[in-house]
Length: 193
Image (cartoon, rainbow, N blue to C red; front, side, top):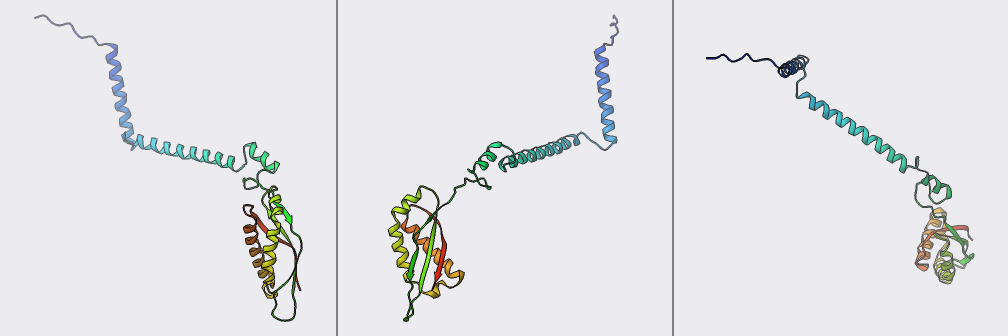
């Protein structure tokens, strides 16, 4: 029988052997230092979580600065023009309407008479509400006069008595002036004799 020619080693074969030897030596070093092939995915997950948290903090900080008015010129410009208040909500400047003075005799049980003199100012929400208030003023004056004539001097003692009077007048003003919203009833002057 004829002998087969000897196999020649090719360069590709040597490269494959070298790669296998390097992989084996790298695996041996990892095992010697306490690392295994399973630790690599755990480290990459930790890095991914840290990056995600850092990114979330940066985005949150930028959003907070924008909505807080620290960045973005539109918010600052509107605040300077008086359109927005410090809380970022639209700023409506109140309108004050001074009613005619009241001089009312209070309810008394004896011969002694008591009087209430008051100057009342209504706080309105908009300038356009003034016309509606003026048109309905006779109704509001009637409501106020009827209510205050039933008061006694003892009903108006101290700041608690004045506060109760304010609340009652505000309630009656909103009923009489609907759909106009009266925000507050203010006393410019109040005297009980």
